[in-house]
Length: 427
Ligand code: TRP
Image 1 (cartoon, protein in one colour):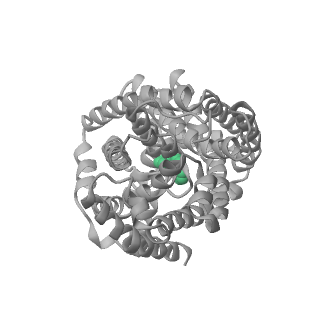
Image 2 (tube, rainbow, N blue to C red):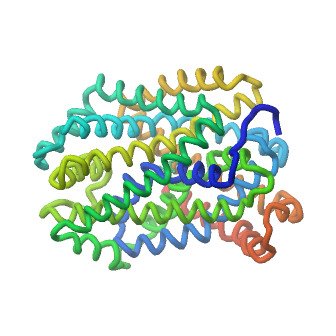
């Protein structure tokens, strides 16, 4: 392991950091509206199957590369599969692109959190809320300021290092995040009419499960677990040798899935409690619909909710930021402060473009979730499943049973599943 690259000082820190990377806007903002668009519980069932049969093995494959080499994406691939070294650059570019556009949406959550602190949502009607959102998202100054502030917070945590920055922030914030979401779920379930939302989440409508819905479930599971762009690889390279990769992976998937479902129960009952609100409203659900519902539940509810969104977004953005920083530290031998500054400045430029130009934003989102992530995941599973000798990979697995299941899934199920969604998404 390169000297001075840092490490997580306990398995708890590693699991919290990985769960922090996984749990983010994808869980709170994307998962509920995807469930809304693709048939409620039927989508959740497919999502669970994808997470277990495809995403978890991809997690192991990616994490294995980081943990066994103690290096970030580029170095790990160079060491294990030199001919695939260039794919490491794809990871770094992908993480950089995602950091930039993700921080724009992260900025909205910071903006909304500050607004809620000032009581800005009290007595809000649906029309007003739509207006607030469109005014915010079309005000260049406000969007840029919020994005810049969010990116600065991200950079500050990464600057503090793996143990004292990322590890410590995640260890404190992740448990708090669970408490906050549970509070919102309880509040949301106590609303009149909430049971329609619960039914919606629990009653499967299989007629809406077409190929795009299944591809969306796998894509969402990948996005939610931060797979395919080196976040898992980099964080696992900071794990202590004696900590178990399989246990860490299972905890991460478990926490991420529980959190996504909790977020569904925080959002859907609230949406259904108000006549005329649409569960499939899409991206605007969190920023337009929920402020209206939550502000009716007392002044503190929006504060807790948007703080949860902000914290979830931050623990995710630091993981993408760190992928690029760790490459500069490992391969370019830069000191952390210099690496952080360079990434910060570059992300300020691309992120500002995303904030100002919706077409750049959509292009980044499309490239990241349809091309980069699937490509990276495919490379990781091919290297761990086909290229490397079995005994090499076997060493990171304490149980022979788990290893043989992993081996089968990573060799056959993952590549087929990943290629099919890539094709479905591009058609
Ligand atoms: N998983 C995070 C979320 O659900 C976002 C995220 C972090 C991510 N790192 C990533 C998404 C890497 C794709 C790739 O919000």
